[in-house]
Image (tube, rainbow, N blue to C red; front, side, top):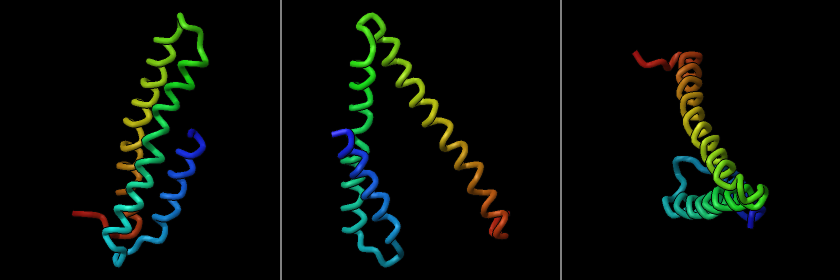
Length: 97
């Protein structure tokens, strides 16, 4: 299931390469469903892997560490993208203002 989840996410990411302005809405919906099925399985399986990898007395610590670092990543990634994207627009001369 773990490999299938990453496989579906990879297939969806590869299909996004072929998107353009003429892509039908149905195709976008189909790729989003594939992506959701792939990415949706990953956090649950990560939790199970972490919980089975540690002794029972460290179960809470391991689970909270997993979700802590996931939240840190979810906070840092938009900040990095928000910083990088305007820099690319400025380099092209498309800067707002």
